[in-house]
Length: 390
Image 1: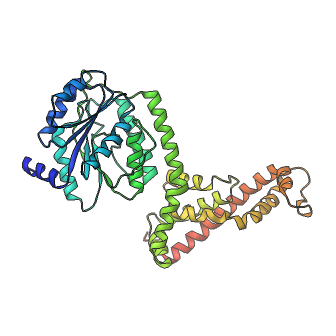
Image 2 (image 1 turned 90 degrees about the vertical axis):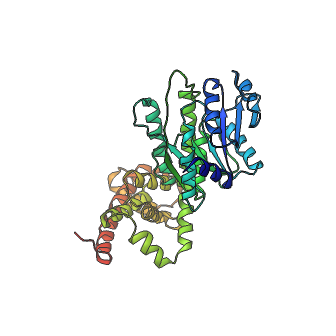
Image 3 (image 1 turned 30 degrees about the vertical axis):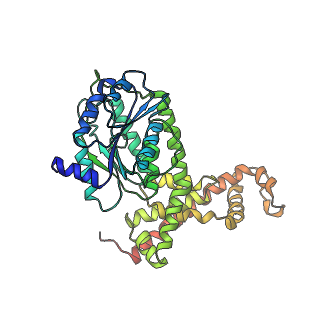
């Protein structure tokens, strides 16, 4: 794209550039001047800087500058910037860090990618963290973030931590729960949960130790990010996956759902049989209250079919629980010394408590045996209705 084409597209698509900044006086002017080559639609959020940031911004009276009295974190600055951008009528915001690591001349990359999409999309700059000069701790942190983003959304990206992004302002969530660095994880995960595509675009990156001022606090911020991911994973397992499963089921006929999402889903017949066996094993196991968490986590870990495993784990629906407990006690009784004639006693909680070890052993026997039986039966059934070419 030519410069004029980029500028016209920025105007037509109502794109602004949002620059959150905190004590980056060394590089701020260079970043602003670089962005001005493409647009004057710039919003700068001065997040309580104590250096010469305020004086620098006074030399750009044509830009929208927001001065916060105290530093409250990058996430808070971005939220305020997004709100201001929507008030001014913008539909998209390109965020660029003020520490000099991003090149303003990559703005056309985001604009061109947006024009190529036929729908709203959240774009994240891919910094190619394997290149020379990238600190190892940054590369590790990015891989760590990529994994959890994939686990929480099913979307595979090469860079989820870059602050160089394009946001669809009217599609991102309106309320957030995090104010600092972890905000940039929360917003992409929750936007993906709203079925908005999240994609990478290639960008350049500069790491100059002499200029760059990082405000990332390794222990505190990594702890906050870990807590956030724990919450997001829990929501994913207990709400998002069941919600998507139910919505997908409602959109299709039962026959179409079975054909497309079960029989013709990814994976061989052997993998599908293992998926059902895993679900049955977890469903009969004694880990009550954690069945969904376990079955989805193990499905992801062993690359099995999450839908099949989740369905199979529901062998422990409430109406079946008394039968499962009784069967477990019966199977465990030969392995525990003492009174094994439990079926002539009144069945109640005290009975289960007094025979807890017996129940645990029996439930594992039940889980293993039933999962083995279902694996064989499923594998034979799938090979009959949907044979694979060997």
